[in-house]
Length: 191
Image 1: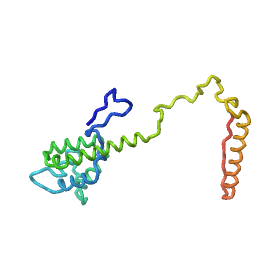
Image 2: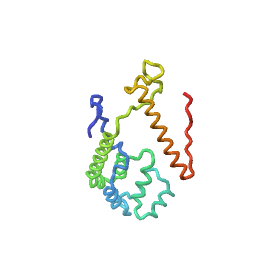
Image 3: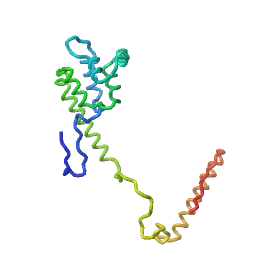
């Protein structure tokens, strides 16, 4: 995985697989994981052992047993808990000695994580540029009163025309509302 250092520019650092949420795993990987873990085997840890390692209690595990796909339900339930991540899941599977799962599903998990990271980066690049903080609403002009009619290229005529247009629109909306026995109340500003 690529790491973002201080000289990486304005791009955010690429998250590692260990920090990715469980939502990074698509349906295909989850189904294949279920195929391995839903089977009750005496020689390998199944989904109940994974549930115990994830911190689920006895009654929660009993409830999951009633589902057609207990591993899928387990992953869905665990996804909302703190500390649930792809890296933590891989760590728990390794702790349970399920190296067969890690070898079989490792490339698919890596692929899903890469797709997730690319999608997150694409969504971040499509967001509009915004300032992270909101500051005071005090005008930052030399004139303490802020913008005046002198700042408008059309002068007072422009402000008068805008005021007239707003009044006409308000009357139009009010007349439409009165047809439906509704009313529009606009507070009057005192400044």
